[in-house]
Length: 138
Image 1 (tube, rainbow, N blue to C red):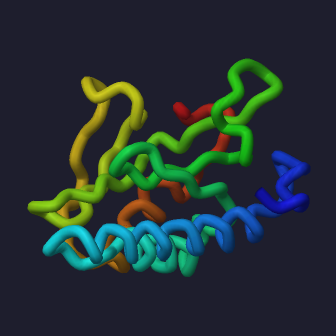
Image 2 (cartoon, rainbow, N blue to C red):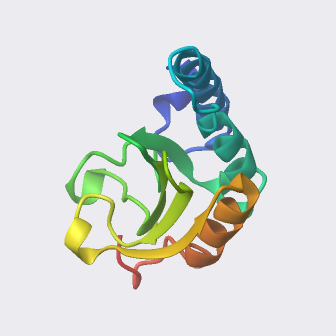
């Protein structure tokens, strides 16, 4: 992780650069071992071109998630929050945009299924247009 990430609530630009590099590396690994075309890097670039670049990207299994700080995993007043919408990468469907907490499957609703990373990114941007705010879940 870059030294610039020391400020956990700071500018997420370095986090996006690191995230894109790691997703591109993962895509190369996946494409060499499966019939499927790599696509997490394309999704990362599409999301970064939206207003969501203000947030910090991360993956959790096959989910593309965002946090309001780099230390989203910390709990309590010292940590950040995980966005209440995310994108799942699906072998069969491409990208599935979900509304809800990525760690509570019973509270999740599918909003869009598409093979287009730009469409998925714009849908996620719409869902998170007003996030983070104290009055929103997440």
